[in-house]
Length: 255
Image (cartoon, rainbow, N blue to C red; front, side, top):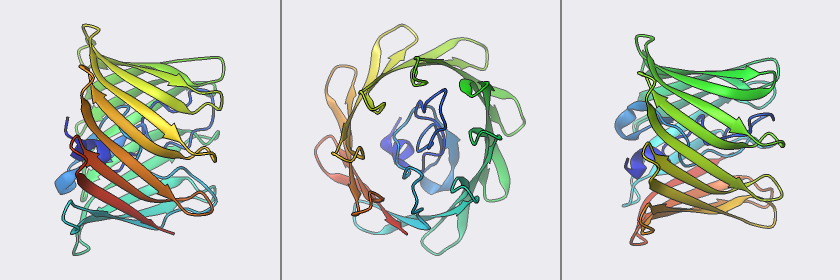
């Protein structure tokens, strides 16, 4: 999987807390390059956490500094993202994603569109307030994949197991946390148990993620992401680098 999928707008899935209200800067539906909307699981968080100040718009630049596409956000009264719209450099919509929440404020559905055409969707199930399962569907409503979550006593998802539409094991994600409940490491394992990818998270004194480094299973560098914030702790910029330290893409957030 190329980083063009990883970096794009993560809507839903990077192993957010099972038993606590999530900020869902992850767990993931993403809008990929060229406007194709896809669903992924446990990818790179590129979306700002829900804070008092919410981004109104983000601009994605390519490695040459050219505008790749824009992202606009719509929120509910509680500051949760209801809709994210991707438009090209000329302002024409390429794709959008819509979210629905339950009474506890937890995401229960994501609908992904390429312009006005439904491409895929996700449904999240809970046992009380604890996230236990996520089901991805194709445009026709057929099951594409199923993800099951295991959580620790603090409500943090420590294991995510993904199955294919046929019920076969696809991959497993294992996550470690620090004392503040922040993810520090995520390991992706293939169906045979071998390591596919390892992600390491770094934070500043305010608890904001400042760097995410990803390694292949053999330990070689895949790439990394740097995150910048304003004085209020709002994410203002994310820069993606390849294994050689070359900037691949930049996202700049406007508030």
